[in-house]
Amino acid sequence: MSVASAIGHRPRTAAALLRRGGRLLQRGWEAVAIYLPVLLMGMLALATYWMVQRTPAAIVPAPVVQPRGHEVSFFMRGAVIKTYDPSGRLQNELSGTEIRHYGDDKALEVDQPRLFSVSPDAWVTRASAQRALIQDEGSNLQLMGQAVVVREAGQQADGRLLPRLELRGEFLIIGAREQWLRSPQPAVLTSGQDRFSADSLSYDHRTRVAELTGRVRATLMPR
Image 1 (cartoon, rainbow, N blue to C red):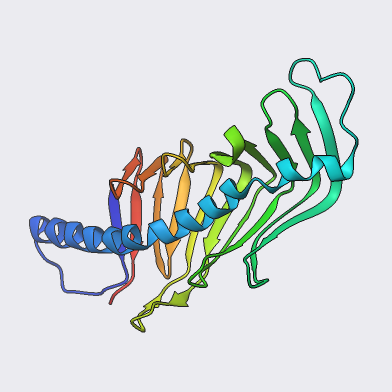
Image 2 (cartoon, rainbow, N blue to C red):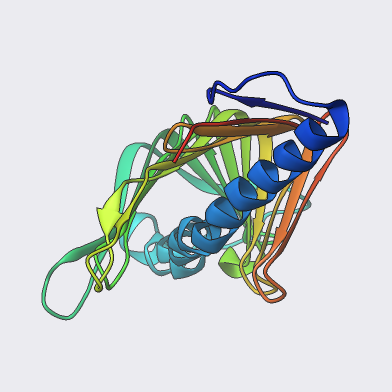
């Protein structure tokens, strides 16, 4: 693990530098881990609405013969699916060049997905990838190929400003029911000007424990 910091100081002993680096890394990761649930929960709202299961009857007639095996039961091209709260405010939006629904496991596959979510307290989360797969009636969301999840900067009720959070990776998985986020491949997490990278990343919202494994690096800016 290496820690890079933009803080300039006179040379110190290796032990002192290591201790200081460890404290900086801990403070920096704690700052990210506190706000990572906001990023996660925004995507959970997107993964669980499962809007498409209510649209097939309005789009295509019910087939006489059920599809055999893992076959596409219907598809939509250039579709945009939205959900609104009771006041008419947009909550979630899913768009893609093509959306395919599979009849055997009710999975939803999206090419070039673009996802947008606004939480009840106005936090905005966006996501994009080359492909998305939503399974188990929305409880499992996979983003594959140049996946990016962003929670925009905002202000808490107490007036404290929270930085923009961005998570990048080739394969991001969100478990809505168990409330976890994983990247089994290299991922980069950016919080404001702080940056963390690792060969794999796992976060459990229930325990508030995040684990970065492999080659872990952190760049922390002075506060």
